Structure formats: structure tokens, C-alpha cells
Image 1: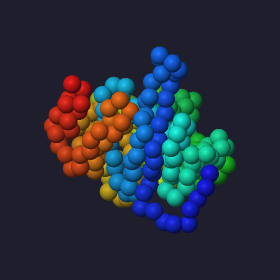
Image 2: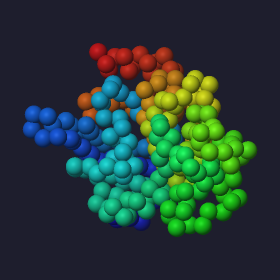
Image 3: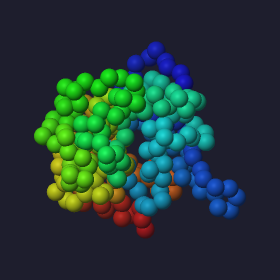
Amino acid sequence: MTTTSTPTTTAVALRGVSRGYGRGATAVRAVDDVDVEFRRGTWTAVMGPSGSGKSTLLHLAAGLERADSGRVLLGDTDITAASDNELTALRRTRIGFVFQSFNLIGSLSAEQNVALPLRLARRRPGRAQVRQALDDVGLGDRARHRPRELSGGQQQRVAIARAMVTAPEVLFADEPTGALDSTAARTVLDLLRAMADRGQSIVMVTHDPAAAARADGVLFLRDGRLVDHLAGASAREVADRLVALER
């Protein structure tokens, strides 16, 4: 893992990145020679037909998977050849990740779930810091509740607080509203929009045109390649572009 001394306005960049699975006749090129930059302080949605490589692209950018070729940069840090320990440290300090399934630990309270990344990074979690993270997502009064005592939307907001408690440079979200009803999804999207407006860098995979339209820009993938981009588009425009890609 190498760090350059030149400041950058890029939160994450993929340079000629490819990732495949399988061999021979069953080989699949999930991400195929992708060049893309995600700018600091922006919210980008990633869309495409099923199997287009959206989640793989997200996992590569977040250091959850390794590229077969190309380079991945987190800010001015080249993480392409980072060791497993270095990548783990990055994910605990500079990267936040939110999953569709929340991934909360059922035996822990909301505040204990939020404090977990700090404990894993061997940092003593301050009670005020954890409560502030929960306050930021509107759940300060649910700190002692366990996941089973929270609605799906509340669990997702706890997951976002957990991802944000370390003040990561980039928040990656993989279908963060996919398991939520429309009201809860709107609340989560409002929260992400407020975070982006405060300068947080967000990269989100979604299948929902209404969710994508809340972002600053939308990237479209097909067969592992970036094929289109929209900025400031309506949900209808995003949906129309997605339908065109699926033909």
C-alpha cells in the first residue's frame, strides 16, 4: 500500500480495473476494464441490469475484493497491493460500509453495535461519541434497544451510524433501502442526502430509480462495463435509461 504526497479531490478511483470469476467456459467478467472516479463530497448511485457487476464494483472500490488487474486508489492511497491486515485497518478507519441486510449483532444494543468498529480498531469508544452518532441518525432515544426491538428502517439507521462513527472518508452502501418499506426508505435516503450535503462522499448501489435520483449522479453498468452517466436526473429519466440498458 502506497501513499502519494499530492492532495486529491478524488475520494476513490478505479484505473483499468477488472475482476472475473470461474474458469474456462464458465468464466464471467464481472467488472471489465473500468475507469471511474468518485469525487469527494458527492453522492454517486451505481445502477445496471441484474448481473451487470454493480456489487462487485462496490466491493472492489471498498477493498472487500481484490482486482485481477488495474489499480484502486482511496484518496491518495493506492490500496491495490495492500495486505489483508492493511485493508482491514482501512475498512475500520477510512471506509464505512452499509449492507441491505443491516448486519447488526442481535445480542448487542444499538449503542453497542455502533461502538463495535471503534472496539475492533482498538479505540476506546466514548459514550458521547456513540450517542452523537445515534443522535445524527435520529435514534438517540433508542440507544439501549436491541435490533429485534427496532423497525427495519431504524435498524438501517443504526447500521449507518455504525458505519459513520469512525468518520470514514467514504461511505459505501449496497442496496441500503432494498429491505425497507417506502416510508423507511425515504427516511434513510433523506439521511444520506443530508450527509452528502455536509460533504460526505457516498457510493451507493441501488436498483431503485427513485433512490438513485436522490444522488448527485448515476453511473450505469452493463456486462461489467460503464456505459452511461446521468447528473441531476429525475426518477423517470433514471428509470427510462435503465430500461433501455435491459433491452
